Every structure is written in C-alpha cells, then in structure tokens.
Image 1: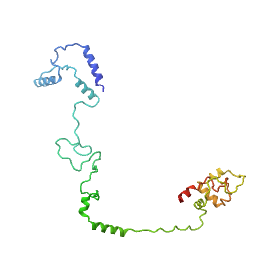
Image 2: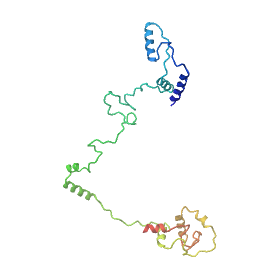
Image 3: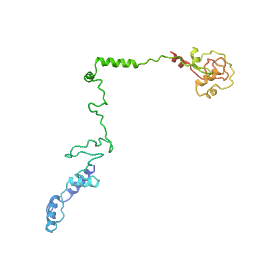
Image 4: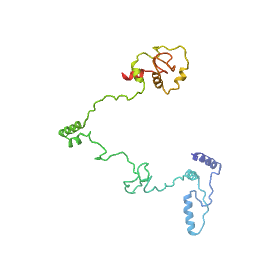
Length: 247
C-alpha cells in the first residue's frame, strides 16, 4: 500500500533533476544490458562502470516488497509431495487414493459424504425397481405374518397400594376440594401468635408446607399459623394444577 506514495516522491525528485542524462558510465539506461556487458567484461578480464538505470516502478515495487519480506515476482516455494496441504502440480501424475483431503490431518482420510452405489449404508426401500426385483406379494404377506406373531399387547394393571403410613396426600386433598384459593372455609383465630411468612419460609416448598399442615390437624385446625385466611391451603399452596392434571 506504500507504493503509490513512494512513486510520487520519486517522480518529484526526478522532476527537480536535469532533463537529460549525460553519456557516462556504461553508456546505457537498462539494468539487464549492464549485466550482459558486465559478464562479458569479466570474461575478458576487464571492468565495467556501474550503471545508472532509469526510474522503474517495477524495480521500486520489487524493492518495497523485498523489504517487507514478500519479494515480487519470485516463484512460490515447492509444495510438499504428499501429506497435509499437498497440492497437485501439473504433470505430477495421479494422486494417491489415501491422500488427506480438505483439512484432514496427516494419516486421516476426510470423507466427503458420498456413498458409492451398492453400499449397505443406503437403503433402497424407496426404489420400486429394486424392491420389486426381490420382493413379491407372497414375501410381503409372510413378513407381515412374522411381525404380527412378534407383536405383544400388554394389558394395564392396577397401581400398587401404598405400604405403611406415608402421611396425608396433597393430591387426594386437592381433588377433594373445589373452592378457589382465598375463600374462607374454616374458622381461624384473630390472634396471630407468629408470623405466617417467616413460618412458611422454613419449608422447602408450598407442597411441603401443605403436607405438614394436613399432618398437624389441617385443614380444620391451624396449629402452626400458616393458613390465616382459613381456605385450607397453607403457605400459598394451590390445588389447581392437581385438578387440571385429572382433567
């Protein structure tokens, strides 16, 4: 990207200099001619004065690129003959079948997803000509008969009964009620001995609070003070999800 600015500076310097170049030095203006004369002089044992070549954008670009580490016009380095990153060269012959493909590491063959015809990885059940060549109406009937023979119907059975006393069931209680949340159904004392919010915070969930509420005499009695409105639902417990599951 610095080539245009360098060219402008060089052109400005050339404009300030003399318009003619005196016949001096090797007597020519191009560098290849100087090299040829120099080689001839060396062969004869004489010397040639250094040449003063004319301004050339190509030589300037080559010098800039050489300074940046990317010489201009130099051939690319030879590619590896095999392995990772191998590139086929013209006239190099056929490539090996097990060569790496794409970004596959050395020794691993990357698959393109193409499946050769006749491979067992593809089912031809949708190909009418292929299926009709090996299947008949009789073979289809035999296969259906085998499938029916293997088919088993499992009859539903009753749920097992609970063993032992597991405490009150909030599911049964929810299904036995029909009144909305917040509807007073049971008498409660106006004297609150504890804070319902702090008491409810001790339980892991409203379901746990409702189980403890029913186990301690609820919904008729509220010994823990977690059902102050008397609706029978402790700590904001809601029976509606259980009712909806039944429907």
